Length: 318
Image 1 (cartoon, one colour):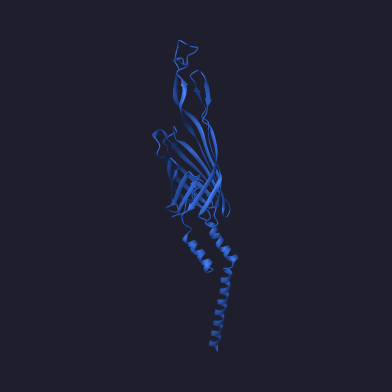
Image 2 (cartoon, one colour; image 1 turned 30 degrees about the vertical axis):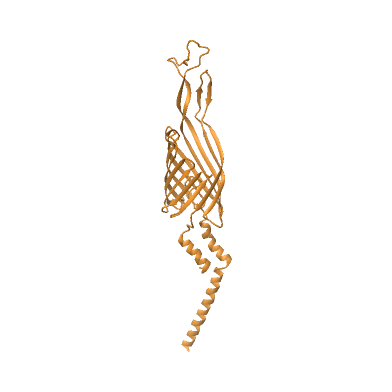
């Protein structure tokens, strides 16, 4: 009799557990529960990392991720993550320039990352007089989570068209507005010096008086001129703000739309003419432009564990 009741109890227990398991499985596969579990996994990979627009953030391209970026049709850039901390970008700015930009970033505390990197650019197919060689070594600090963060960086910038090295201050940020929409911005600022070539100046005698071409005609003779290269001060700024729209059907693709702004000012100087005229000049310009970016990751680079988890939830409910 005890054996009979034991077997009966075991049978009912097994049957109850089986029925309860089926209810739990069905509940986990319901649209509401499935969406609640899967959505955070899908949304977590919405961010397309690496850059704000051109400035690097502390959240690099993921390990073994290849990413293509086009900016305003002329900049074509590829980025690759060798490890979770080391990545490199390289590209061309049509039609004349090429660059490479390696970076190392590391998490030093929760929501805090340090960055060290370099940007080197050189011209292609240009003569020596028009060639460009420029380099910037920089270090930076990123604070915030993967979707909302700020980065401040300081670089040492040199270029063959500048008389000396100068500092480059950078500030960038990213804010998530919805699962598929971000606002991003960056600001580059550099004080320093600039060379103004072939500025006309009067030739002066020992008493600092202009020298006439024909001293016998003091009223009608023009002045003798020298053409000098002047080193003048400058302040340069570049700013860019974009809204990034990430495709819901393909989270590895995005378009970004916004506006950018270039400005250069300071460095006042005078140019002296043959007939005594003086022109006051400066090296100031302002240039606002539209800002359009396209980014495509080649393939699906979500972590394998997350892909397996999504597959389990969709097909087995756990």
